[in-house]
Amino acid sequence: MPDRFDTGMAIRREVLGDAHVDRTEANKSGFDEPFQRMITEGAWGTLWADDTISRRDRSLLTLALLAAMGNFEEIPMHIRASRNTGARPDEILQAFMHVAVYAGVPKANHAIKLAKETFKEMGVEV
Image (tube, rainbow, N blue to C red; front, side):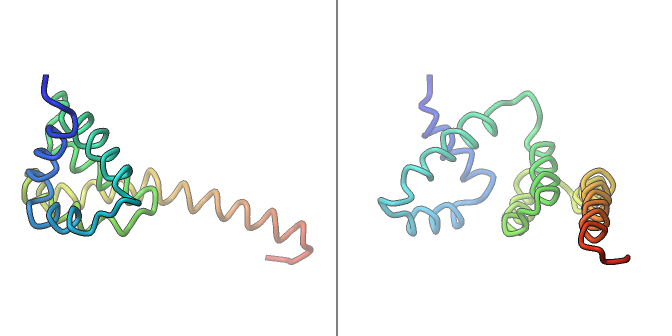
């Protein structure tokens, strides 16, 4: 059975590219080495290694989740990775449109509701 770290590193390189992984590895220190090992084994060596869904689909899910959670700093890296996963720009756009409907609008609606309640409690008319 292949080691999850080795499997994860191979998949990470296939998806993100050698240049990205080499930069990350070069910047790794003793401080963040446990974190890098954890994401290599867990995210890449377990989740991305599972072939139940395609890398294209994983790429689209990842981009949608990153956007829905507001983790925007990761999006450019995963957009670049789409060259290797097969996720097309039109598919990525559709994933982001789903985010707008299913994550963006509900989040905004809830935030507006909370703001109205808070303004009312403060005695501010809106």
